[in-house]
Length: 340
Image 1 (cartoon, one colour):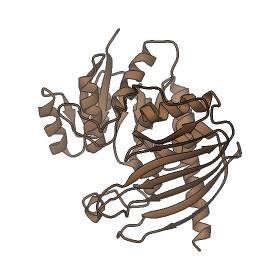
Image 2: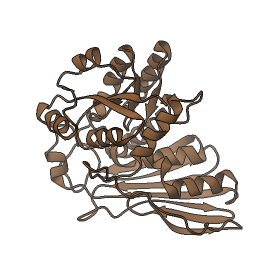
Image 3: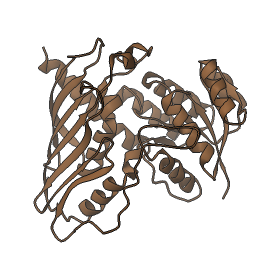
């Protein structure tokens, strides 16, 4: 199996995660990193055997020999940097959110098609053990007709989380809390229950000095008939409380919970008990030189390697990644009317 050569742009918290994952993967080769903050890039280079680093993205793209560029920069840069990488002849794996504008997402997809390159979107929660267990039961229709769903993203972000950043908390650069804290949850809802045909929502900013919301509630009506209540906040006292999805079906009830959708909190499904000996190994990322929060980025990279060495692709590609952006945009658009 040939090693997949990877370049990574962005050396913040998400970028560090990608650097560690690629460095640890047997079938990938980290060829270079890039960040406009030269100190961050130098620090990461020193950790990884003096790997080449660049401060200018244009130089990075023109000088490195790679197969895939991982884009791990602030949200508003995902669109232009993806276009530049595709135009330079690279495949792209872009972190969530894919973009902050549906029209830009369509341009990203179109450009990838025009230049004959792959555009992947990071959706690591699809690899979580509880998520895979429910997906198996749902695909086999063990819960019967799904009636309703409750999704809660109840987390904490202290004011310094925003104050210490030049892009978080701002409409033009972060977009909103849904893009940062809830997009993976919305992706799973669409993956399981299909397209959303209508939404209602109310948003507010209650405990932070920021431009975006820190509390929100929405009702999503799926074309499949499923009703979903979505609640999200970054105002939970002190620390993250829960990230959960509860599914109510005709023949079963399941709650996937924990802080990061890494536990089965409740499972009562007709003729489909949980198998004995299941290991819930979705722990926060720990890749030697990097200690993180969420889980399973290594499984995304492993799958990408498998995809590039086969004739089919199973990672989330651009068109599927755009679906969560479309729903988030609907929520924000309808909330503007509800809040006026």
